Image (cartoon, rainbow, N blue to C red; front, side):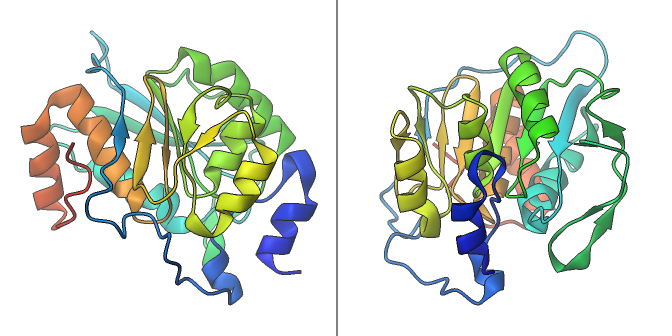
Length: 239
């Protein structure tokens, strides 16, 4: 079964993964970021780091998680000067998770013992009801919960996008609009930011959204320094 078919058939615990690896076309006139004038939507205020300790940053993972969706933001957060982010993975169980391309990951934590996060990153991945329930509990108390690519489907199924604007991978716009009529789908944008919930279009746009989160915490100069260290030349995160 192709990934697009899997997504449509898997209901409330469905799959949200990048379709190109399944042999589907990655070319579309509505690709996120094609329009240079289509700036991201930002509605988030500056964020305040915790008075003590680091910014606890949880990466929710499940089988078929698209690697760059979580490793791109991971790289951003780990490269910020003075390492203010504490990064860890969270899964439904302690069993190894197999991401796209066969990458095997041993989760740092399960939903039962994970530290309370300030940030949550949700990549495109196979839906898991246990992980979905965890998201519904922790997301309302985070500074930011962000999805990348079709990770937006997981946020939608957790009820976190109701009444908000959001985006997802361009090849799943119609699927998303059909499943979540209560969400205002924004097409062709790198990311859409609400005060506490944010969604990135797909793949590399997760890097842009992560840089925007860094900017909200520490300002434009720190985010720019991080991008330069990574030799990342994209500028669509600047708004």
